[in-house]
Image 1 (cartoon, helix red, strand yellow):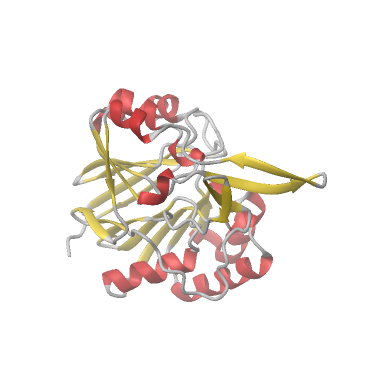
Image 2: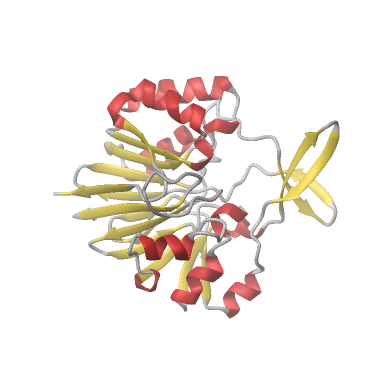
Amino acid sequence: MSTLDYLKITILCENAVGNLAGMGEHGFAVYIETDQGDYLFDTGSGLGITYNARIFKKDLARIKKLFLSHGHYDHTGGIPMVLESKAPLDVYGHPAIFDEKFAITKENGKEVRRYIGMPFRRSLLEARGAMFRLGKDFQEVAQGIYLTGEIPRQTGFEKGDKKFFIESRGNFEHDDIPDDQALVFKTKKGVVVLLGCAHAGVINTLWHVSKKLGNETFYGLLGGTHLGLLEEDQVNATIEVLKEVHIQAIGVSHCTGLTTAFRLMNEFGDRCFYASVGNVFEVAD
């Protein structure tokens, strides 16, 4: 299997700004630089992708491919803005990214339904230059770079978020978000896993990657973990397994939430950091 000689990850969109420049938003997007070329992982909700790319001197016209972690608005809302800089553009994702996704909650005793799926129709995005490459399988998308595809739910404690649903012909069914996937980099220091929201579960994701790549050493884990929105028993179990994995760098973002992020930093010390807008993670010889 191919190994990257160089990897640089810059957080372009995230809930918080940890730099003297940049714009925060509810969303996630990452600019990726490697010796194989530049790529983009997610696009945020559409507010900051172009602005922050300019602020941090990341040229969206240089990206070779766009990878989507899943079909929620806060990861796909910036696709049209990206296409203004680079089109045509190969866009990788799971077929379920186009599902009609909703969050259904109770507020003041009343049921509230909120659409949280992709804000733009596939036909519109294709008209603007998106060339969707949809699949469910683990695949090498460039030398040393892999997309997990659909992640099997194996752990007993990663139960997901019960408020997510899919609407089809007026009926609502629970959405376990099969489109959730991660981007994986094989470097000389070990495997780096980039998460969107880890709806499939952080540990399920790591186990899937380990199985596909042959029990490689994990060097880095970055991105949204959704742990800030889940039950405490799942958070506790996830932390215990992460301690056994011995990942050298853990950069949490977005749906991890600040409270859970602070706990992770307390548990893992200098190995853990909050990956906010402008934060850079680099792996080189």
